[in-house]
Length: 433
Ligand SMILES: Cc1ncc(C[n+]2csc(CCOP(=O)(O)OP(=O)(O)O)c2C)c(N)n1
Ligand SMILES: [Mg+2]
Image (cartoon, rainbow, N blue to C red; front, top):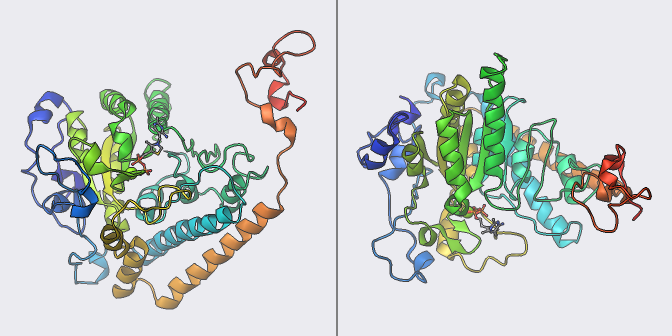
């Protein structure tokens, strides 16, 4: 069964889609298709997480599902498994890399090795891994300020991401971007964005360029897909709606991946959003909307496969809401005192890395020593990344005004009285600072 058979797909009549009841979705396997399974398990949120909420006109519902404890298929013959051993090991390695990298970032941040805000991804690894490991190199990823792990999953070397965090010349943005602005043209990582929602139009533009190349410039081989990652809080931002509209209108090859970790800094999603089921906004624009358990990499991967294939086929965009949770504060400057301890414990017990490990061992896809060897290998990668970042040089001061296109007062006028940016050498480094 298609993952999308769980939702209404009404590409030609968005008005009808808006009035379509959403409670009549057929049930499908909870193993593969979290969208229907989870919405049938809607429940009230942790009471204390909304205890400070002023009285609301109607009961609010969390989009929480409890999939880790849901029954797995018992038959472990290969035909019934959704991944091969090789695929499982790749997913495991990528998630362990993301987690270990972020833990090391915390250590380095508190030792004063990096500056500014640093937002970690711990807990959300199944989303990055579940989606990005399905991409081709030419496909693009656009992220937010919580972007280190998306860059790693897309293949940016850990040492280049760590060096960027240290502000070193060997970083993936030569030390000029920092934590919130990971970028790599080589890997088609089109940026982390500090302003929420800013990445969504960039991703939509990338998807437009793929469609333009294929359909207008007749580059038949251009079947590239773009993934736009962003949070629940960002879905209340106008750019989200504008881009859903354009992507559906022009059938762009894009997947909008909402990482709903239930919080936007200290604001509960349930308190800030009139209808907390974000996935429902897909059908409103004439595209499929899917809700999946973002703590289960196998479920995310199944949904991602279909959404990416749909985009690649030229069938247009998909909105996927992944219910997930961040295991740390909003940023490393956040003492994380607002969230209820019961809520944190609930999601901590659903650690996506542990869940995959358990699944692989129970289904004879890997042995404990094999998984331990991966963990050891990643420890070495992280150690090497820190060593590399530590010993790399700082950028030269002349780099400061490279790629600055507005008039940087005091530096913008050359000795000939002309703007420096008119000088072809401007982007080589212009200023004596
Ligand atoms: C345009 C804009 N407005 C406000 C902010 C301040 N801000 C930083 S993070 C954040 C919350 C975003 O929450 P969410 O989209 O759920 O992402 P998460 O941090 O949970 O990954 C806000 C409002 C911002 N960065 N940009
Ligand atoms: Mg959030």
